Length: 160
Length: 160
Image 1 (cartoon, rainbow over the protein chains, first blue to last red):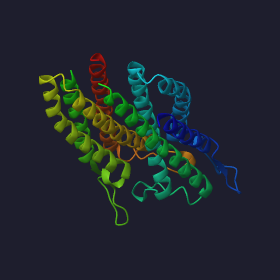
Image 2: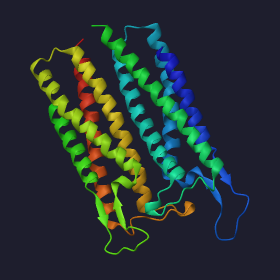
Image 3: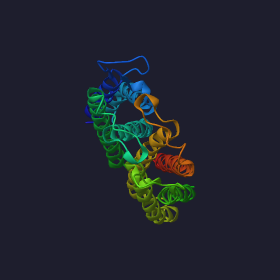
């Protein structure tokens, strides 16, 4: 169970990181003053999102080895607890990245007329679609990380 | 330790929630077309921030009772583990709220010239200061919640 959830979470974070990092769009017209180009690097929250997904992907890849180890030796309580703490830290990083990016994506879709921020998606339609889509992978990964931690907690609680 | 950290985290979240919820600013001039007023309700990420801080405050207040119970009966392993899971869930909610609000506050300070989003703080200086300040309480609470969970984990691990 633990292994399967970890692999699913890994797919989610890797997918998100790649989808966001490769998202850019150039509009078919330009002038000498402004470049009509959108990249994820323009928005610090998206950079953080890509970094968070990358870190969590790398961690999940490493933790697969520990997960195998726990399948073989189910009595290893101490390492299980340590792994659970790292899982938790990664869950917090991933949640922070995903929600910061979600706040920006929401603004990009709706805009904010009170503050004179215009909806960005009217111009950069495909960029918006891509970046919104890449959030899904990240939130799916959040769900699977939560399941990983719950499974670990139940395994810890079952043994006295 | 557990009790002290909980109380400190509670002060942080309560402070944040009140600071953000009472933040509004009306500019000393107005015309018939636009209202020069800034409220936290204009930004969905800030509403989520206030809600997250409120929920976590309420939870922390309730959990103080459990914390007392654990001081009196230090052998209660099962409830300690359950409490740890709820702590974790609250930590994730608080992190999500704080980072979404931080992404917006950053945008409000710096703006984004590529996307034609102008720095909002030039007009609403005091609103900006308040909302940035209220983030501090929330991030301090995140740190103390993490400490609470680490203390609980160490207490769980020490007993075989």
